[in-house]
Length: 234
Image (cartoon, rainbow, N blue to C red; front, side):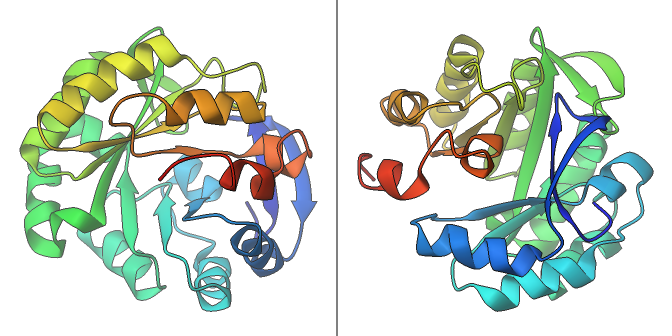
């Protein structure tokens, strides 16, 4: 957000913690400590729809050799192209995917399904969009299945109620989504609530789960990325 490394609590812009004005330095740090991917979110774009942090994204992708994925405000083909040109390996469609499965299908055909992930942000199993400011009434499980069927390779499932709270993920809902998606040949990344190394180990034991995102917990020192990287099976 505004070129800075930040974390939000439950996606609320007024509950922001700023960690650094040098995103590339943190990117190198997480790579050196064992991260497999970097999960990037342009929070300004998530709220406004306008990509304002591509310079920071380029700095990050230039600083590391591990792949990066980017979400936040990616709502048309031009935005996807700008993100890929900035060096990311995969883009995350959120609001637009919830609005149009045809868009997911078209983008998977145009850019390749391996480059298209759909981020599903949910509370109580119901999808929220536009920086979590609007609830759609749509079932997260149904959207996940439909997005994979439309051509997305990956679902990033975020439980809003747990995000940034360090109180543990919503394993139950994630397991339901994961079982349905993997049955269709897709992959799921758990997001939201990771607060301890035990949470990461438990996520790693979920059959077929592709990965999990660790955010606030590593910034606050509650989880050592180097420690958990050595404890999980790949």
